[in-house]
Length: 225
Image 1 (spheres, rainbow, N blue to C red):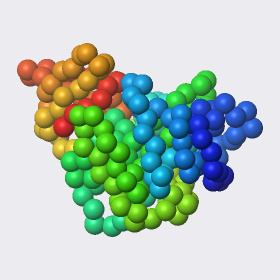
Image 2: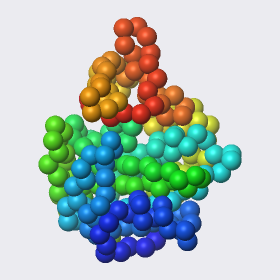
Image 3: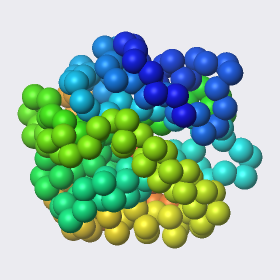
Image 4: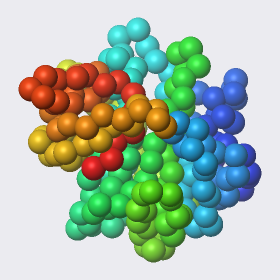
């Protein structure tokens, strides 16, 4: 694992590093070129965690999009170990909630058989997000201490992702997520949204949204609880 003081984007830097191998991590103390889902503005505040790791997909691996389930489970496990007894919950597709506020987010980027999984965690402070509430752990631990904890958790979860059935892995994610029946608004783009109730996820990680007695399968979008 490399822990470096840098500006830029850990995801892009790792994805473009031809010498990087699976299991490598790049962790930044500061970051000024990251980005969120749907090209949202990225907010980087001192003391928070910004880290990325590389996964190389194999022919026998599960559906690549389901890797986000492994990332979410690794993240909630690591935070639960670091700060026990907190009301943590996974929110589809790639957020970790503390109560009803966003504590952390995950962004996956792919180039061929290489996928970089990036994590942003509000360890120290919560940025102001338009239209969304954010939470922080208020300095409960430093990024340097959280990095090996998350790396170990992700390595274990990646192994389980590859060795479990997709159905079993999806169920493991579902146990840590918002309950079936939760009312959701799904934003598929900045100008398009649909509402319904959460009906679980497919084995490949797609969201099942029940609307008017029918179930829509949604593979990309942001969710508002």
